[in-house]
Amino acid sequence: MSVIAKKGIKAMTNETKTQDIAATTLKAFKKRVNTLFTEREEWQTTLFATANQRLYELLADIYNVYLDAKDGSGVDTKKYEWLQNEVTKRKIPTSKNANFIQLITKYVFSDSDTDSRRVNSYARVLSCAAQEGVGNGNAIAEYITERGGIEEIRAALAKNTKTPKQRAVEGRSIAANAKNIAVVCNEKLAQHAAKSKGNYVVLLGIMNAQGEVEIKHAVFENDVSDERIAGKTVVSGALSNLYSTSEKARKKNEKRDAEENEANAKNKIFNKTSTTEQDDNIQHAA
Image (tube, rainbow, N blue to C red; front, side, top):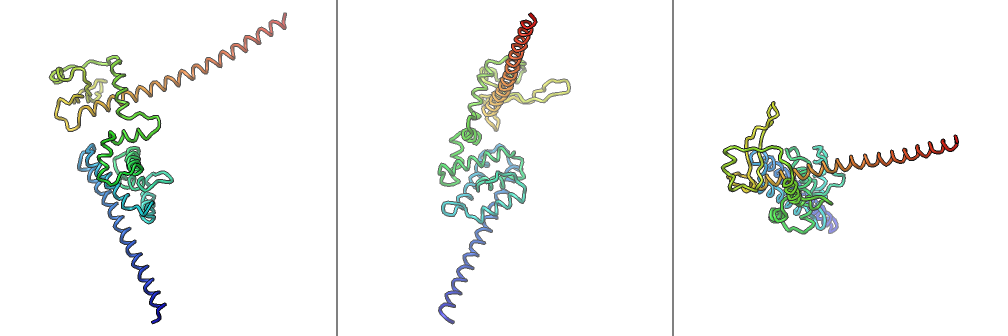
């Protein structure tokens, strides 16, 4: 066998080995992504959906998959194409030019109870971490916690958007100046009066057929009970909601006032024109 023929066979053998390695790598990537999908399902069906620690671990795993998929300055083309095809096949809504982090986050959280806006927030946080050079997934939980949580980061990235913490502060100011819509008192609430005076309380109730609210549970801001979720977080959410609701009402009123002012301005022009025409007619008649 000639030297040239031997070199040709060797080149073909090396190319086959390269293709085999690439196929094995892609197969391992697919398995890893699908494992994350299964772990997300398990988390949402067997654990509390509010268990941030496990959520952050899932996001850390997604981030590590992204880092491992990077090939030089970009992401491995085959892995990106596979993700794109899977997202399209499952009819998962994504932006036209979704990046790798967006695709894998959407894929892992597809077919779940998590709404699309929330999933987009996860992807934005991970993209932000990548842009800021977070070195590995193990640092993701600390990265999110230090910045006040996922919603805080999302709001900070959105132009002219207040963070949940800022909305809660504004809501507290609104609540302090608002009129009472009802006063509720019973023995259970009175037990915590001394500790909770001046703090906010969220009452969980259900509306009955008579239009009355039947109170089932109370959450105290200063966390007087042994609740799993801190009372301060629940109250902060309620105050944030108060601010958002007030802002919607304010903007609606501003829009209505602007429309009324515009209508009045047009009426003034019309009335002025009508008066001028009447004066002209009187002068011609004279």
